[in-house]
Length: 525
Image (tube, rainbow, N blue to C red; front, side, top):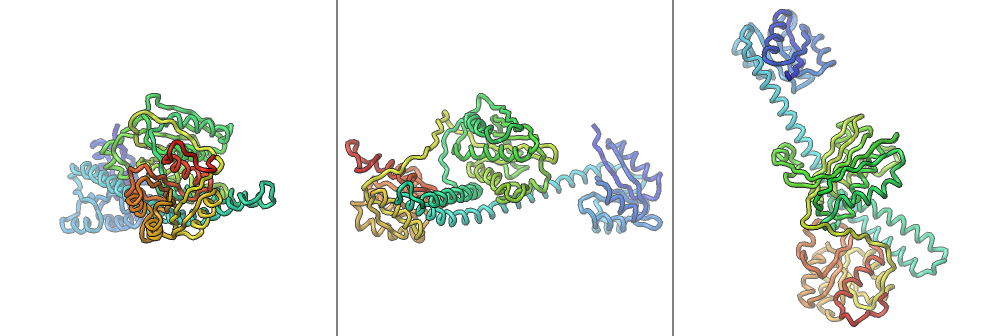
């Protein structure tokens, strides 16, 4: 099939213009063209149509090629401009090239016309591709900056929310079940949990979540998630599954990937207010090195593809530029937080995966999520259920630099029967431990503290008392924060904010693991 060429010919002679068109067609182009011979005609042509190339005579009655070049460059700096003239000398030609023309040819000697245009069209496409890549890299850098900001905000908010949640829970525990203050305290807890959900989404975008990856059956997770979605997604939206039955497991945190599936499906639902179809597919996929070279936000390798497409209204290029930014939304005020797709982006990136999206107005949207495969058989996904807080009598050292959280954690643990020693940073925690190592059964340490970090303090404590267990608490993690204790099995990590129930269960899990089988800590139930 002949390549199409839409040419604007600036020429006062119809015969010379016809010769140019004939030469282009002989060279294999399917040519459509318009001939202009005056400034106003050229301006209208540039304003009303998109052109692949401008071919201009140099000298015309009342209009010149130099003027034509100035008009073109004032409106567009990408369209190739070629002179074809019978009067163009070498010195004038050099001046023309310096002014922004791509080439010059002599009338009657048009053998170079087709090769010159082919060369310039390739150059134009290469420049456009470089611009697209530059724009993509700039977008990724912007995402990184926003992510660092979002992570810092979420970290500070988590400390505040954690204190609110802790004190509200403590207040409820001190009241009888039917006390009139229980209702307001429960509402405070509910709103704090809602705020915690927003910070978790920010942390997901910033890639600061604490992940618990495992070999995961993606197909099984999709089936269980969509069975829940069908109850809330609406009767006018149909979910269609096209899942590869021979799919290898993925290496991922199940709750996080479940969030990805939910957010993508809910986004698709919102794009189809009159109803439509969501298609979820899985298969094994490769990203070759040549694709990575052309699209630097891709990483070459073998992946498991999760695709979610819809028949919705689609998005234009401007919207696509911003969809993964937190708080960006095209919905009405109050109809969304703008964190759904930002969360998807952050989760996939933290898992070492790739996010790609294709969309156009009226043509729906297709999200492609590339996830890393696991090794070995898939493990069962166990979801945690809410349980009552568990009690104990052991001594616990709490190291936390946030005053509100430190006091709330102390009150929670004392209410559960534990003896509590407090430290405001890692160095103080270490000093206390050195002076009273034997009575301390477990330490609860913030990961990041001024001076000495929680992991660094724990390393020194276990040198004094081998077998000591720790709970590290963190508002967010960079992955490198816990490198010093990576591979050890004597600690767990809790993401802030957390309640007494979650904290108490992790404490008992660690203490009961190390206790003799014949013992049963007093009050443990």
